[in-house]
Image (tube, rainbow, N blue to C red; front, top):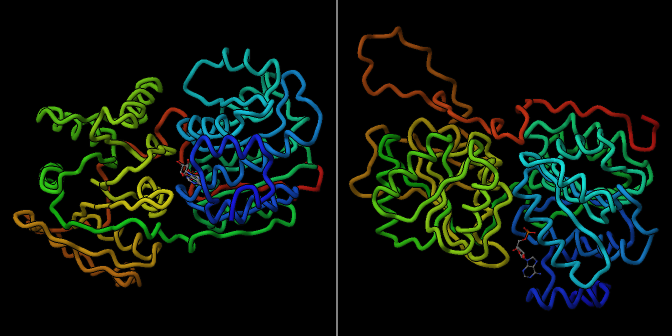
Length: 445
Ligand code: AMP
């Protein structure tokens, strides 16, 4: 199959040739024809599958072939994304695909000055990539009007709900024209996502390109059991022993990021860190340097690393397991992209056994464990498997507290949190049950 056989126009084919895309990925093959026909789409596709081109190519083609010119302060297509990093990345991809088309594209997100964004929107933009909060700010200040919007794309919809954007989505939805095409992409399909889809999409075509919630099979994954206090030491040991060339490391907290970066830099290892406390420009610079290969180790929290797209990233290390199991899939989606192979190593301590079990249940696999000589944990990590048996075990009644209490484990409880996913500046607090309760799309709001 070729991109030409999917019905794409010549200027797009030329852009793809420049980018070296030879054959469509499965999500592209499935999404491009129906999106060109104007259908609504609900796609289960994780990062790394080529989903951005899957929606962007037919979107750009339709905007070129149909519809009026964009008016001042208007947009013709909206792409909503959860984070600013993803906004930049998706916009950059769209800009490249639109290289030979007469379309204006732009990205807006919070954490940077709003005035230049308002200026840029004055002339109108064909495709606007936006995080929900900043988009609403701009809309409320009349810097952007929605009357010309013919296509809405929700990218990484699960993450937008996880990050507490359901209110913003509801407000944007209420302000959009009722006649439009809507495409929803999500790595996972939880009940709130299905509810959102039911309200926003009109008779959508459903496509699924990887088994639901299963991590990319091109990524070799394993777990190294270790005591919590020895994680950094083990990381440095493995880095040297396995000669990792470039590693993206996930830590749970901002403090955890800074501590590991300090330790690595103290050993003259080329490392940098990104988390929600750092200014956007600093984060972007660290990402750019990592992408350019100038930084060997990038340590990040989940929020900061969202949307990070690096070609050929060989290794992802989870210094801490994510609190939300879906984040594991997102994290390891940073490697093994577009046919490459990659490896994802999780350093797991006894406290994290329930998190490990949840990941195994979600990804329907029992992760292989490899103990590292000299790092065998004193606090054993109980056995887990994909059935989640450990989660179902009734908890033993608590014994009265004896003094000392040596070796007592605190299973699955994670209390020393310096950062929840909600604390980055662009992100609202996580709500457990997203309240997305507008009426169906065809009804008046
Ligand atoms: P995405 O899942 O959209 O984040 O894309 C993952 C990566 O795959 C990006 O670096 C894309 O540039 C790349 N990519 C997307 N489609 C193709 C294709 N058909 N051939 C080669 N690379 C691709």
